[in-house]
Length: 116
Image (cartoon, rainbow, N blue to C red; front, top):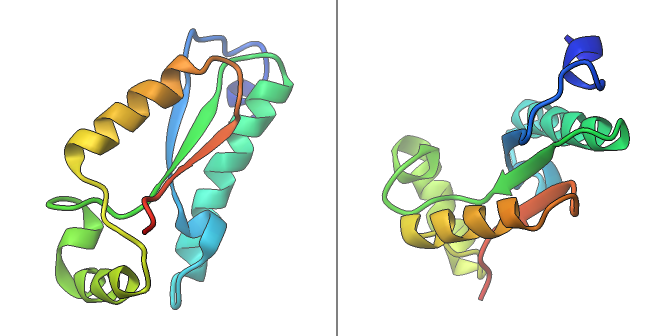
């Protein structure tokens, strides 16, 4: 997979990987999740270093949908919000994605997590 995905033999006009801000900031009890998302960030960087398209978007928790909006994760998100870590509205998330994709070849990894 590495030799195909991260080299110039796999050229595309865009390659956007969806990662989690957990790769940057960590989250109690989610070391494996953070590590897996870090791998996506590294893949984007390796692609860019090889001169092909690649960006990894580290998403924070979304409001109204996704993993953070249901189950046990929703309780953790409420605790995070109390410390200044806000939820990302769907409209703001899509706007941010459009901005990240329009930047071009820089940066390799974009963290999207609203703070107060």
